[in-house]
Image (cartoon, rainbow, N blue to C red):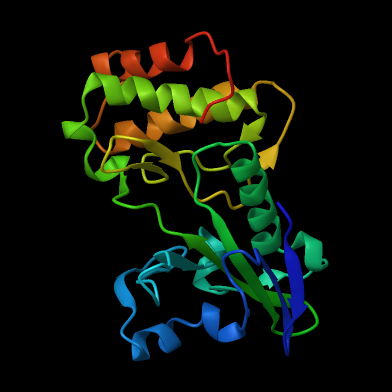
Length: 241
């Protein structure tokens, strides 16, 4: 996928020209969308997100996310990140990874654009615009109703990402979406990486298991988790699509 870059007043925008013809900083400003009535839902917290209606019948619904810090440092620094160069910005790195995932045919959010804005010499703020996954709901909000076949599909999906060397830095029940057709998608690839096979793969699964346990969901011994692992361990032939 070919991404293009345009400068802004205080930073730059990296974007997919097929999906964002004339990029502007307003494309990453939720207030501009709220004025036009395009915001259908907002989710606040770490990584505030806004879900946007398309501008035309031929357009696509979008998701806008502003990067926010987590952990103790968030008490003092909410949305600033240390500046170490444009290609090191979290938004540019995530957009480039999403472009690679689309090229590989892996089920993740499709990239639209990324914006960083310098705050001062040492820091920047960032935002990411992606195609919204139609009908997607977090596994965390419905895992009690998910059947074993879908759990198996969750495992097979994770395995497909691992087979491509894609390490999700925060694989948990909130970052796995199930769409209206029971398709499985992974989202939020902030700090994600492409790596060689290694112990990180089992660490990913262990992180997911801890996430499910916190929600009083399937434990490692449960039929749901066993179905997930059977999907993960299935022989893989053609690339996942």
